[in-house]
Image: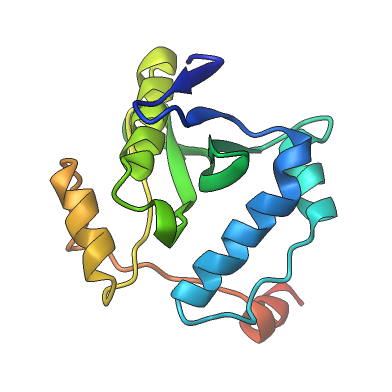
Length: 166
């Protein structure tokens, strides 16, 4: 994994730094708005700081910085396959500002995660995409990703989580 990579247009792909957090949070908010959930983001800069830069971080982020601003983000964490006995990466958020789309930033971020997998013996990168998001689906498939047709994502949260945990 490189310290940073200069992309063809001069933008820099690198690990996130603490000073990036306000812009990373803005990209997360932008993604939520794109995914039709503009009021769903509860996280704060302080939450991100603790998760990404605390004493034992379990979440990681890479950014593409272009023209002094964060134009793209990849926020991820490790998962584990009991079948392979190996870690993988779960990509929580991949977002490129609409003004920067088509610049190769999304592919560069995924390429960096693939390099991290290769360097560490991780077996795969997993993520979810909304069924209606045809542009993202087309982009992912153009990179060789395949949908997990037989798998359905589930979530336990809010009242269900509280009820089960009581």
